[in-house]
Length: 170
Image (cartoon, rainbow, N blue to C red):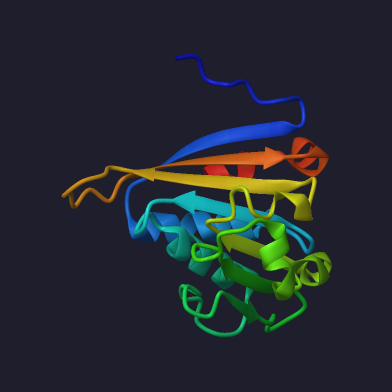
C-alpha cells in the first residue's frame, strides 16, 4: 500500500521515542515551536504517551499546575506563570460528536491566546483552525513492556509550511 503524500500545506516529520523521558523531552521541544493560537491534536492508543508529551509541553511553556490526564474533567486550563500562553488540555475520548458537542468547552474562545491540546481530537476539532499540528503516537501493541514509540507530527496549514518542524528532531 502506498503512503499518502502530504499536500503542499503539510509538513511531516517522524521521530523515534524510546522512553517516557524522551516523550517528555519531545514535549519540551514542542513548547519551543508553538505559540498562542496553536491547536495540537494528539492521537494514540491508551498508554501511548499523549499526556506525557503534554506534560513536557506544559513544562516548556511554564504553566501553572501539574499536567495530568483530563479524562474525567474533559478539559483543564493551565495559566502561564510568566508571559507565555496558557495551556488548554482537552481529552475528547468520551465525547462522541464533532465540534458541535465540544462547543460548550468554548475552545474557539480560548484558542487565540492559548495553546490548545486535544487528546483524541481527530474528527472532532479540525474545524477550529486551518493551521494545526496532528501528532500520532504509535506503539507496540499487545502484552509488551516495550517503551519505544514512533511519533508522526504533521503540520497542517500555512503556519506550519512556513515554520517547519525541524526543531522537533532535537
